[in-house]
Structures are given as structure tokens and as C-alpha cells.
Length: 140
Length: 140
Length: 140
View 1 (cartoon, rainbow over the protein chains, first blue to last red):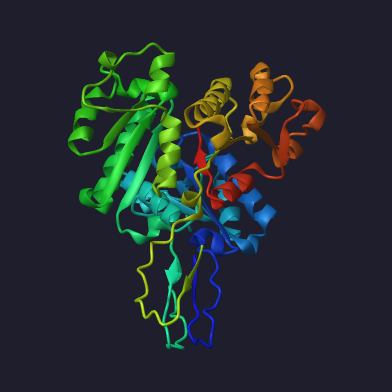
View 2: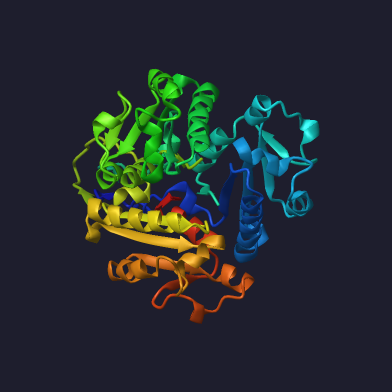
């Protein structure tokens, strides 16, 4: 990987480190968790996963997002069966993102959603982009 | 990767840009969607995901494959409950790939499968290879 | 990897090949399979996936791990419904890793677990780290 040019050349070329993928360069961890099931047990599992990741790696060392789409959208509605845990997740800087595509297709308004969450145009595309940016992907 | 041979030229080595993973270099998006459940609702969700990805990113800017294996193989049989949507997916250049390992293990012939789909020797290995090539992975 | 440039050779700097992610540098395949469902059919599917990956790529060319967490932990208990297949998996050098977070939360002891398996502090964090190291991720 290294080519040293030594011809009356006073300054050696500096050593180069092996190129690393961007994801391995940073010490910061990032994970996007997908919720696409209409199953409150899965919603709790995703919230547990998010919390465990923060506890294990240190809340300041990791970015965590939960993306809800398709039948998983209900997780983030104001009448969600895990609504009492959503405030806590937001307090802990866990991103909660609802898929607006799913909302349009199922006639759901933002006024139906839990207050304080975020929105992405298409959940699956957001997940693709995060992977491209080096985020880990976990589907509980 | 760099060989700078500059005789009589005591110039400093040129600055190198930060290496990026291959996936981030190209503007083209690529995603492999996995179907391994015997659940027609999941099959519809995977087909919806594929369509949404094309609509959101532009059909010409993204490669989309759906890989069916294990109990998910039934999605791609000629008598599939989503058979009417498979022709449309193929028309839209969405790759539909059936796992031949699963077919062998369950005594399914190509004549049992929906016409026009593709085949991979082992669905899970195909998914691994796609990830290695930089494709995003989504399991609806 | 070292190219020595000969003096008096004013050759132009050669073009640089595109840096590749570490995962693509090695010929070795690596995959982490996630089990987070309380469904023995999923456990069998994960074990089938692991076996197929080894058969397709060659047992010596691939690292395979199955990480069980949440409701999937039961897969790796000594009284698991797939216990008869776990010994064979271990014989084939398939890593079987149980999540100690889940064990603590559900009051499960190592003495309750199948003998010979491995342990990780948090299953989801282990999966994140593997992806960061370039392993493929498959959630059957």
C-alpha cells in the first residue's frame, strides 16, 4: 500500500495507515432498530434493546434510533400500548421516527401520533441510508 | 495503494482524501429484502417496501431484490397469495430470487414457482454476499 | 505492499485503486445470525441457515455465530426444544452465544443453559460490534 520514493529525496513519504471503512474509524457507535410488526412485545423488546445499548456502551457514546413503519407504526401513536415508555426514550435521546408513507397509506395524521417523535418520509429508505452511513442495523 | 516516485522532487507526499467504503462512493442505492416467514402479510409488506424504495429514490437510482427462503419460499410459488403482485414487481425490475436449497429440502420444482423469477443456490449466502458488496439489508 | 521507486525515474504517480472496506478485502466470510423470537421454528431455521452457509461456502471459509437474546434465549437453554441440534452446531464450530442481559432480567443462571455455549454481555451490542467488524447480519 505504501510507495516510498527515495531519489535524492530528503523527506521520506509519511507512512500511511491501512484504509478503514468509515464505520470503523470512529469510536462512536450508531444503531438503527426497526419495528415493523404490530406486536407490542416487539415494541418493548426494541425499547429494551435501545436502553441496553446505551447502558452497555455509555449513553454519550452511541446514537440509537427506532424506526417504526408498516404495522409497526402503531408503536408510536399517542394511544400506543407502550406510550408510557416513549417519553422516557425521548428523554434518553433515543430517536423515535415514524414513517410518513405508512401514515399516508393508513390515513393517520400527526395529531394521532405521540408528541415529540420525529418523522421520515419512508422508513425503509431511512434504514437504507443509515446503513450506508455506517450505522448497524438490528431488527428485534 | 499509492506509489509516488518523484526523482529530484523533494515535494511532500500529496494529501490523501479519507478513504470511504465502496457503498458510500456511489450514488446508487441497493437493498436486499429478506422474506423468510410463511406470512402473506409479510410478503405484501416486502413488496410495499420495494415499491416505496423505488418511488422515493427513483426507480433508476436503486437496485432492489427480494430473497425468499425457508418458510418464505411460498411467496414466490405460482399459487402464491401475492401472485398478482409478482408480475408487477418483475415489470418494475425488482429482483425476485428463490432459494434452491429450500426448494430441494421441500421437494419443490421450478415448475411450481412463479414464472420469470430468479434463483439463488442459498438465500442466506446470497444475502451475505450482497451485504459484502455494500447493499443495505432490510428484513421486513 | 511496499513499492520502491527508483531514483532518476521520473515516472508519473500511478493511479490509485479505490480503497475497499475491510470486509471486502478478505476472502473469509463471516455472518452473525440473530434469534430473538420464542419460536422453535425460528430456532431450527437459524440452525439450518448456519449449516447451509457452511455447506455452501465451505466450513473452513466462514465464521458463523448465532446470538440468542430476549425471548430467543430459550433456544440455548439445556431444556431447549432444539437441544439435540446444539451439540452438532458446536461440533461444527458454530458459535452459540447467549445474552447475559436477558439472563439477568429473567433470572436465568448459566446452570440453566446448554453446556458448551458462549456468553456475551448484551446480545444486541455484540451484533452491532460484529457488523462494525464487517460481518454480515441475518435475522431469520
